[in-house]
Image 1 (spheres, helix red, strand yellow):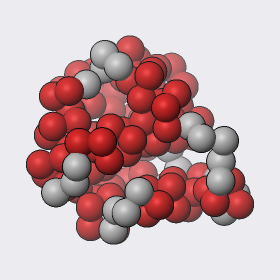
Image 2: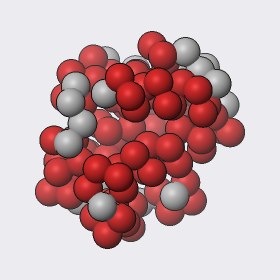
Image 3: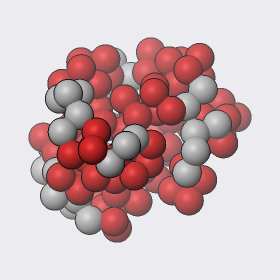
Length: 121
């Protein structure tokens, strides 16, 4: 997890704490919205991912008011102070990391099976 946090922080120009929260939020979103078996395989390959997901699930807040899905994800990430460019950079790096961990085919299935993610891949 530390490797992923460091990479995201550098690539997106954000602090490590924000990168860690971002990872937890995105993985939590994938777990909820994506193909569960594929997403769980990815989560299992990232030490500390479960803790990051648990730490990032704060009961909903504004994201819950937005309904759910990709819109709620964007709202949560913007709540961390991320702009659209930073969100795209983080998503691309996270997907690249995922391809390295579980393979391009499985990561492709997660992206294809999660509504709205193709634009970030």
